[in-house]
Structures are given as structure tokens and as C-alpha cells.
Length: 393
Image (cartoon, rainbow, N blue to C red; front, side, top):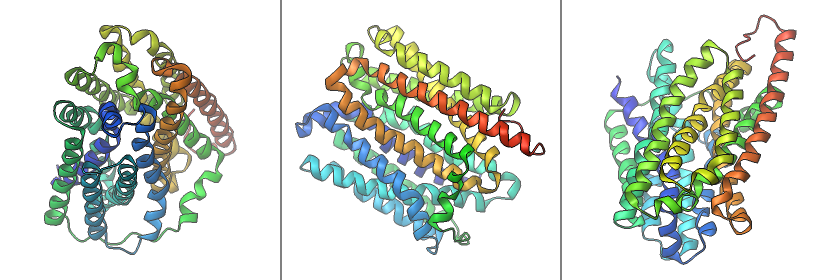
């Protein structure tokens, strides 16, 4: 294992922890700033929307900046932003610091994956990318619950210090170990978004955005969705988040292999059906600790298990633009997180936090329709060009 990849993965681990840990400390943030829980949820929203909108923009604007310099600058921005959140005296200032943290994440993530691909031989690029991206998925199983427990036993501001420490450690490793890498070919912003003109790509990206919105509605407000059984117990919250993330990590690996063997269409279809049922049953499951645990495990598995087949489908549809469409897919994920925070905030007064799963199920059903429309477009394209891979059928 190339330790330089692990250093980049640590940076992605910090980014993911910063994004997902808010679900575990939201009540503390709400109480600290004396704002409603739905308003407090916007700390996740502003971070996610900043990342989603700026990731492709920054990648185009900063194409001439040396990779090592950009990585260090992004992590420095990220560390300063999270420390600023930790000492923010008002909720408005806290939101502003979350925007700055989102900027740091938008600078780091695409640069880190691009650096990983250039540091290894072409035949090892897939593995290198997987190692770096695993840092993001691992954050849901380890970083998020650890951060939530730090916030529960101490203060949510200490969680922000924890995230800053993770990013600082990655920065030190990059400064010490990472070589100066060649600049990638310059790709304009227009070129980066051009693949969405392909209906197969556009529908697949929309599928991801909508289903991510659907399940993150409940995740953003996790502690209040399950408050009857968690009762603000930091150990239980941490354990549930570990269960959610760990099941997702395992399922993602299995789903990736299944996409190669039975085709991504079957995996996506089955996953979206399972996710719809899971979201619809959350309000019933959340009344008992054991049914809650089962629901959380299945939820994490199917939600993260959809990531690999979605990426598989995008690469099938746009093989020559794979890095670009995968980057757009990540932006779509964060736009989904953004929309989820807003939808959840609006829905809580209307239906109650315990019933957010019903709203999420509706979104996942829409995603299923979009996925099937994408399948029709992919099948039509394969009939016109039978030499293309039919793996997505």
C-alpha cells in the first residue's frame, strides 16, 4: 500500500466526517445557539451546497496551481474554517464558517482524486482511486460516530477541533511525503459540465441527486428521528452511526462486484426498491431500539450500496469523460444533502421529525422512475451502437 494514498484518504476522511457528523451533534448546536432544530440543520446545508457548486468551478479556475500547493491550501482553509466554527459566537457566523469549510473541501476532493490517479501506474489507478474514496466512506463508519461522541460527552465545539486535527494531520503528511505532481490538462468549466447533455448521463445524475435527497432527509435529523429510542444517549447515537456507516462500507464493496457480474441496472433497481421500503418503514421502526437498529443497518447498506452501481453506470455511458462525470456525481450527492436539509426543515413542522421517512420514500420513488428512464436511454444507445458495453442493461 502506497502510504501517500493513505495520507490523501485521511484528508477525505476529514471532509466526510465534517459533512456527516452534524447529524449527531445537531441538538447540541440547536441548543447552543438557541435556534430550532430545522434551522440548525442548515449548517449541513451550506457546507454541502458550497462544495457541490464550487468543486467543478474551483477545479477549472485552479487548473494552473501546482497540485501539492492546492492540496495544502485547501486543507489550511478547511482547518481554519472548522476552528472558526468552534469559536463562533453566533449562529450567523457559524454558517459563514461552514461556507468556508465547504470551499476547502471543494478545493481538496477533486485535487486529491486526480493526484492519486497520477501517482501510480495506469493499471493501478482504479485501486488508487478506491483507496482515496474509501476515506470518505470510512468517515461514516468511524469519524462521524467518534465526532458525535466527542460532542455528546464534551461539547460540540470539540468535534470541530477533532475534524480540524484530522485535516491538519493529512496536511502534514502531504507536505512531507507528496511529490510535486505534473499539472493536469486544463479543462474549462464548460467542458466539465458538457457530459450532462447526454440524456443517459443526465438521468443517472438526477437519479443520484434525488435518492440522496430522499434518504438524507432523515439522516440530517437522525437524532430527532430516533429520539424515542436514543434519548440523546451519546453512546447509542455513536453505535447507531457506526452501524449505518459500517453496513454501508460492506455493501458498497459487494454492490461494486455485483455491478460487474449481473449489471448495474439490476443492482440500482433492487437497491432503490429496498431504500423506498426502508424509508417508508422508518417511522414504524423508530419506536423500538432493535427494530431501529435493523432499519439503520439496512438503510446504510442500500444507500451506500447504490454508490458503486451508479458510478459504474456513469462510466459505461461516458467512458471518455469518466473523471468529469464522477466529479459531477459527487457534486450531485452534496446537492442532495443540501436539498435534504431544506426539505427536512420545512417538513418537520408539518409532519413531525418521526415521519420524515415518508417524505424520503417519495423522493426515492421518483429516483426509481428516473433510473428506469435512464435504462431506456442506455438500451436505445446500445441498440444503435451494439459494440458498446451492455453492462448497464
